[in-house]
Amino acid sequence: MKQGGIVTDLMIHWAMNTMNLLVARSITKEERRAIVEEWVSILKKSGFDDQSLGYLVLGVHLFFGSVLGFALVFSALDVYYLWFVLMMLLVILLTVYFNGCILVKIEQEFLGKAWKGDVHHFFSLFGFDLSSKQILSFFTTRMYMLVAWIAIRAWYGF
Image (tube, rainbow, N blue to C red; front, side, top):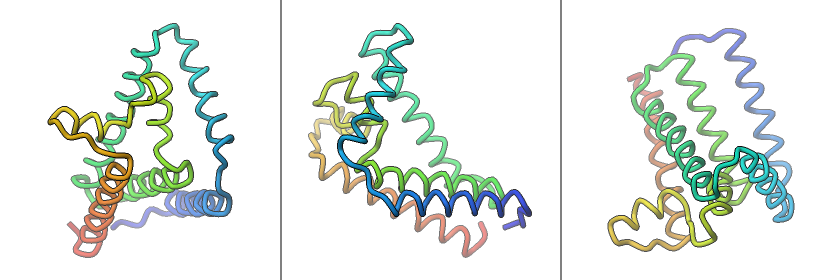
């Protein structure tokens, strides 16, 4: 990897401070609920109906998740790659901090409590009905595979 200089040092410092804050304090169910309700009220001001807002949040969720995943798999090993790694680390930490993906919780507000997120929706298209535990297992497995891929790429330099 190339040396990033001051920008990379600042980025690493910011990421470490963020991780320390996330790990040092857990969030209560009431605090998580307040955050979701705040985002829902902001989105409702747009004037769209609930279902449209739910699918809009889903689209944003899928777009950024896909871009981040593809960038981690296919981008060159440079300072931008380090940004992508830190963003993925932040996604993982926020998922742990919020006890699940906050975007899925916002999607549930618009699409109903039966909504279990993009992974469940994808598998339900093929007739599979995954439980919340299976979805969490799928997310965890996907993250382990991504972390292994990042380590292999960094170690062998490709």
